[in-house]
Length: 259
Image (cartoon, rainbow, N blue to C red):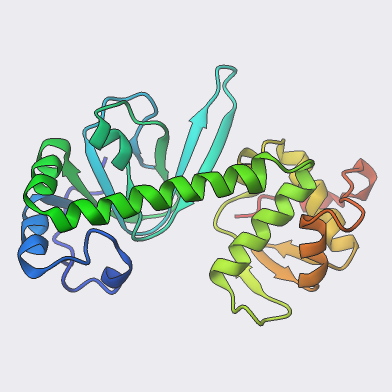
């Protein structure tokens, strides 16, 4: 549920991320129509926006914060599909197709989200052809990103290779391209990293321990420091001996939660 009800938050016109969003980059008339049908709310950490298998109520535009999208297997295991960033549209394919939500969306931190009811959104698209084109672009990017995730993580041979590829993807997104020793705050915990690369929490801890032992990277209090970006890339490309997960490598303090 929204935190303390609905707040009167900034409009799309004044949003600093407007130029990066597919739906918000519209003409004045269409943008005004979009403003009239959206309901923007504040959510606390760990709030659920929608649940996998639930009938689509509408779309959610993430205005500020982070949201994880996850799938739940029959045995209770959770697999994280992605971490949505500010500007992402969530639940869009289910809303348009009238099919149940494909995943569960849960906030990772206090977030601001705009909700548009399915009926209102469909009428908005019919009345605004440019918005239809923008939404089609978004769906195309979603498909392309899904293929990239399958190729990058699903087809990797080992958990270590998957972890290195995930870290490199975050570095490329959040750090300067020419920084030889990038540093960033991890967007999710080690538990959630394990859910994202399909292994257990203990394996992720041991993989980080081997990265530290080799002098390639280390992670303390959720801050990732990469000391050898080329070596991390070589591990991701399977050009170096794979990371080890031997129990004796892991110092006791490395079992602490990342974030």
